[in-house]
Image (cartoon, rainbow, N blue to C red; front, top):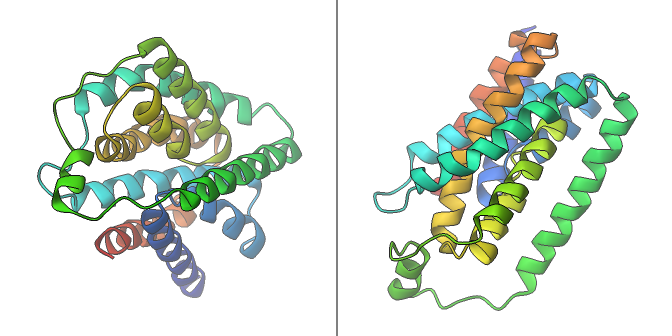
Length: 232
């Protein structure tokens, strides 16, 4: 049992570091690891991953620099749609066949890979102080609220179904469609995914898909890994 807990903590640590470094959240690594290495049912893996997403959000937020935080007002407004979607996704996950969950997860991973490749091919902006400051400027006003709320709801549904945070949807929507500076959008997304995951995790826990003996050591590893990844 002790070796299993240590292994779960190690998996969580790795997922937390990679999730924070790549900005993808730990769920994209946790679900495959838990199903393939620990033979967990997919719903149990997704539920545990949601607890890990909460830990990732808390870990990253705990080391954020002053003036580099989330737009709380924007986050809470969008969370009205995202949390509703997350609850719907969590309930739906309990009604559909596990094989469908695997397929949905695989599709989201492929979409995330495509998004990451697209970002990688963009020319890098100069790493000057003015460029960094523009990422977190405060003289902006979010626009296109109907589209932002709709896409946030979709991100919530996918989070509830797959155990991912949905940041790969929220960040581009806030930055490209709602005209929020990229740094603010990223920090706001990280704040939001913790709330979104908490809503879905409640559904999974009530249904009996989350075992504290699995989720707690995994979440501890994710929390430490997220803080380490943020500093790196």
